[in-house]
Length: 259
Image (cartoon, rainbow, N blue to C red):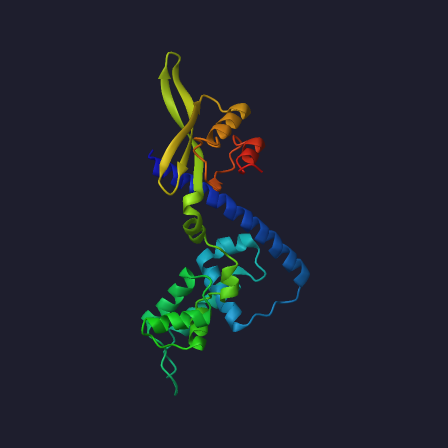
């Protein structure tokens, strides 16, 4: 297994666990909201329905049911079908007014919003103008609303994993274990290899090899990595690791850069 493969697996495991925490919280929040609503049906605007429909379709019926949403999965998916039907409905002739923007321009507006989470309607309009596309601020708002994309203040609150990595790439390291089978006089013996990788350079450090990791050994490994003179983690601010019980509480505390 290559070091890059190992770090990708480690990152994927960490991301999945962090997402599960968010999902568990949202499930509980949805239960509380449904208890408060009781038999009262929530009222949504068309714009809010479009936003929920776009997000809900990506999740699917099973995931929506597990989340315990304040509206049923059938309702959310019905909103999505209506949204798609309205988008491709050609039964009514268009009345007077400006024609809808070309598909390429609409796709570009959506792409700008997704890749630049802090850009509002005016900023996107101006950026489109710099590219030679004359488009109004209201039109930008309508396009994003039809695609279920929140306004900039809402998008700004959620920092994407990609944005976080781009901002802190040089200060991030990741660590994990993998095992190797070694042929010894007593037969095949499994050894644990603990490694750390610097994401920016992909430089890998084998921090320790042992038959069975234990608390004191892990603490010594952490001290070696944080050594002021030649520690591999010197200058790093973020360390990605999973919730493996081998990482003891003391180990995690020591790796919080002196906290």
